[in-house]
Image: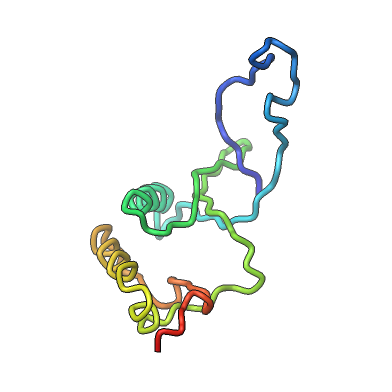
Length: 139
């Protein structure tokens, strides 16, 4: 996966007007694993929907995975909504709603209200992931 960003023109000198070809912070190019979604016939507004909902969720202080709109360059550019993959060795298990409510009631209420706010109809335990280590021994 390659993330392309459109930024400002590169500076040719640092603050002391000294030449520095790779930037004043010693930048380097990296590749970050992630997941991508794109528009389709079934979901023609997937990209703007994912972007807007993620921004609204972050504004409301919900734990939303960082993401951005990315482009695959070519004769016909292809756009994606790309989310970071935090590299769990194994996929996270589906969240147990009863366990979540028991240990994180404010977060669960926030998720339910957010789903109502954005008219999300597909919230299920399989698309809400939470590591078992998150659940404290509250029983």
